[in-house]
Image 1 (cartoon, rainbow, N blue to C red):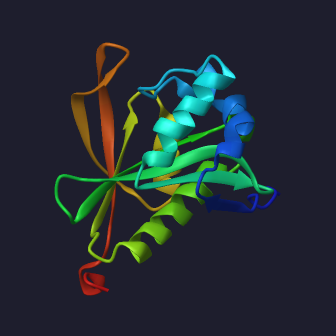
Image 2: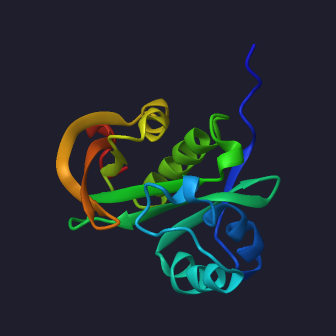
Length: 173
């Protein structure tokens, strides 16, 4: 029997999270499919917090026991009705339901906080089936293969587009 998924909470980042951030953001396995490569120093992690994570309109630390083990963010789309979701989780917590729980919680919070939002999108690299499974388990629907959609380390990559859409009868909640 599988153990229950851990209690995942989300909260805004704080500058005091720099060491926890460094622990997973410096891992090339975690940043492999991210535009931002691994952070090499504590100073770089602090800059990433100050000039990146803390400045995003909706960005949360994925926490276990109050300590950040990843991040989840939502960025507004070109149209007010949609936004894009992205996430990263420390390698030590892969395969344990942490990312799925964080994505579910983030989607619920975002739809509650942004009643104008009708569609939440996420893309996963074609070579990242674990991320695709996270989105599917979180209730996102696979929509399309987008060829050469995402520039990663100078190479155009294929991604799979996923969405979570508010049912028509709940639009304008």
